[in-house]
Image (cartoon, rainbow, N blue to C red; front, top):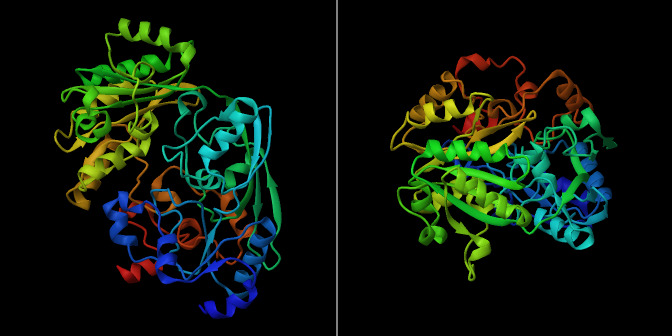
Length: 465
């Protein structure tokens, strides 16, 4: 492709072609996975374009369509699966400068896609004591558009489920990639075409999200001698309808002691822990419940005067657990699993003991289709890709589906499968296949055999490999 012929069409827009900066903007947190690090380390775009309005987005897409140049949208690059990495080069569409909180009203906010989640909550809390229902552990850096296009749930999922659930996104405004780009307003079932689709079928330019009451959440850590007891406590706490929590995260020993360095003075080496965020008015009930369940409260932020340097609880949870482990031991990676209701505790106990010294359990309790159950984000000591695949097979053979974080395509990750409706929308919104090429197998290789056991490699990566 000839980027030089594109530049005159972008005159007046903010562009960046310094190779070092372009490469930096071509990356996300793919390196959490040693498999993706090997596959994607060389990937880079050719040009970064930073639009400041929907009008500028339309102009960029029309110009790139005219010249046949791929476009990969990017929020702030906090995803873990290579979602925002330009496998075919071309333009990185950096949406970070479209970051306005456009309006706030009871139960909802209208936002530009580059608005950072912590900044949104700061604005909504000041305006009307409200906050977003859900956020990832990268709360202070992740953008709302990136969260919707690449995420699935997070802190708050114990109450509200995931982004896939009806009501957790109200409306999206999306621009198509055609000779004359269209602006579409999506609501209801149509939202599922674009949520967790990695920007493969439209560029999000406006988001309307639901809000809930805001609280000054209190971080609490509860210790247990056995991980099975920590898991049972987490499940029981999630079922306590009168105790308002936002996070319930059991982590097996010795991971908390080894990797939560800022909290280590509160922890014991042998203890598994449950990391919680509790509403202030629920603290007395939470403490009474914890005493009844024979848990030991080892850290209660409301009772610690000097919390300087101590990270918030959500930065020990979800994929920040993996990040903290990686900072200590670069050989650590992770998996994502589901422990299906109603057998989640039996499955947790069964799988937890299968890989001593190799896998450390980490759970996130969530509301899933109306029931309390848990996802797993276990820490894995990486040795070989073959051994990693063997561990994955063992989980799945024992009834725990794996959403594979060592794959960069929509289908192989397992969080979302490309159906006929989404594929038809892709044909409508991106008829030349220029939006984030390589991430949707159903578009790139309709005859791909998922039963082959082979990893799908987009043609550019196949050549590089």
